[in-house]
Length: 175
Image 1 (cartoon, rainbow, N blue to C red):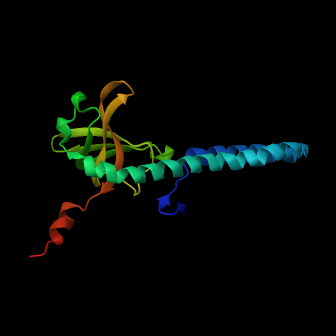
Image 2: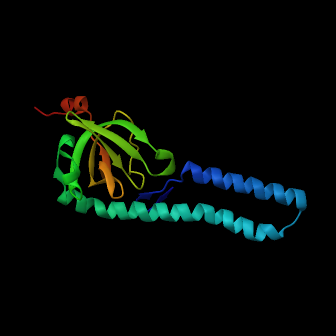
């Protein structure tokens, strides 16, 4: 679903919850014939869909508005140079996605590697394009602790986008 230029995604967990409660409400109504629960149940099921969509829209819009700020302030770094002293720094990295996690709950994490090392990139909303293992990406974000106030340094990604593969770049050169 798309609102303006913001692409919304419904997490699979939300769909499972909605289907579960719809079936539960339907079975209750079929067994009892009692409509009183439908008065509360149907709007509740609708809200189970509307709230996650609204939250997703707000976070997508916020990240879209933050992107130009991060792109302007970001310092391009190698992954090896990211450490505890980098916490709070706005950075840009390029690398290959080696692994993806948690895309089904709209809180994806990517393991991004360059020739110097690898780092986890956490996002608190889905990126604007689908990112898969093996994609060459650029990431803009802020270095944070993995666990609120402690843990190793990770990147809170604001923008992650695919770059052209080296073979595509070489084939498109004008001589």
